[in-house]
Length: 165
Figure 1 (cartoon, rainbow, N blue to C red):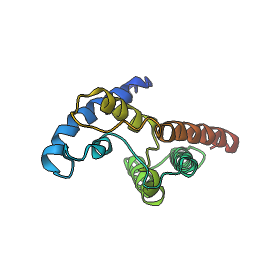
Figure 2 (figure 1 turned 180 degrees about the vertical axis):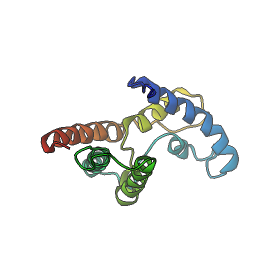
Figure 3 (figure 1 turned 135 degrees about the vertical axis):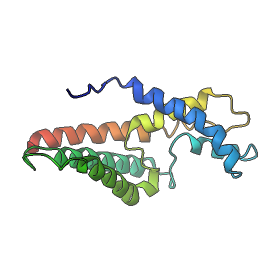
Figure 4 (figure 1 turned 90 degrees about the horizontal axis):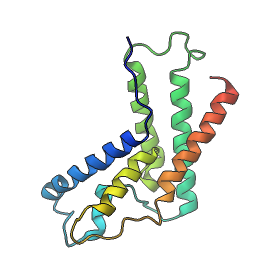
């Protein structure tokens, strides 16, 4: 009997928030560059931030990255591409390599969120946790790693339906 997977979007959001809340103190102990004297670096423990501040280009990068992720994952597990699907345990490996490749190719500009929960939950945790001296939570940039992947996934879903994977 196959295990049921929850589709509740609050689960990854809560998991990322909890994970980033516990990771921050551990990072500060082991990485002296994340210190109270440099409050702007604390946000980097929680969420993505751009290497180059260009909202249009960053948004496009997130849309393309998520579009590629969703489209290729749909192709990997499509019964029309391979009648039996990928070999046992090969599918997760291929998805991992795909995420790695997207990170290498598009991750330099935005930190490649390609999943809104990867950025939103930790950003909320950063804004709520009492971290002493900290800079803002970067809500003026949050539209890029949240809206970009949602648009990319929607476009990929439409594309996959049109192509009939």
